[in-house]
Image 1 (cartoon, one colour):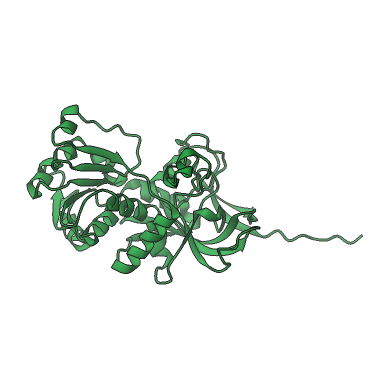
Image 2 (image 1 turned 90 degrees about the vertical axis):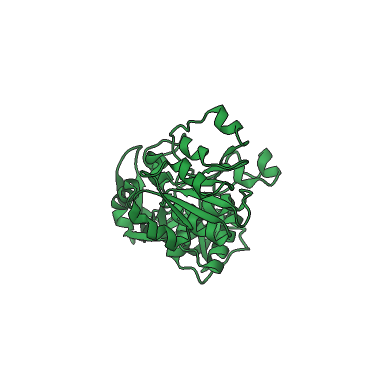
Length: 93
Length: 253
């Protein structure tokens, strides 16, 4: 993450959306040079979700998924945790 | 004496009985929606990295057993009292935003995303790893007919997170946006970024991902083990670098 900050242009912003408990290392100089920002972002409201779905409908943005039956929730979860899924793991009932 | 048998209709549920436990597939009674709630016949549910919070108990105050899942797509099956704006049979989803209190300072300002007692499906109440779930109607998302359950469910957490963060980022069409990690979030972030008119630099692992990144809409591919990532972005231009980080590749950071 520290390396990524060095790639930001002046007034550039790093938006963190991956939810982990790992610390982010940054020096004051990295932020001050070029007035850079680090921001966290969490999802949105159900109305924002509807915007997302309509935009996907309009533009053809689609998730790529791997499907598992509900009975194999353990296997699906392990696949997601492996980081090897292409790309979203998905249960069907 | 005649006895009356009451048929109990059950459903299949994948629950976590205690922090760190494996999933249990059990039968439970189908829940009834209360006032202001809807019961959803779940068709599909995404498995999100943040389900780890429920699975491992790393989110404070979770009551077990708990059913995870906050990328839900289904059909309204029953409505609780006082619900008039939604109809039985309507296709709906539920994402991370599973209900707000409506009374905290943020809600009173209309900033529902930051509700101080935000309810989260699969954490505050049972989520989508089950055949039927109950949710407050303010959490419901209408699904357009042209999107399948498979298209819609992952967009309700991974999709909205990348779409909504990018559209509020301040980046303008033509700006350079780097997406770190071609994973559950990143593969959507690249697509949304390209559709927003950004020059998208995808940062991935290994040369074999270059073709996929380009297919998703990236203009530039940066192979992270072989290129110093920051330097790679700097080389592509000095515009707004705006990175979405994928949990799948977090360990690589």
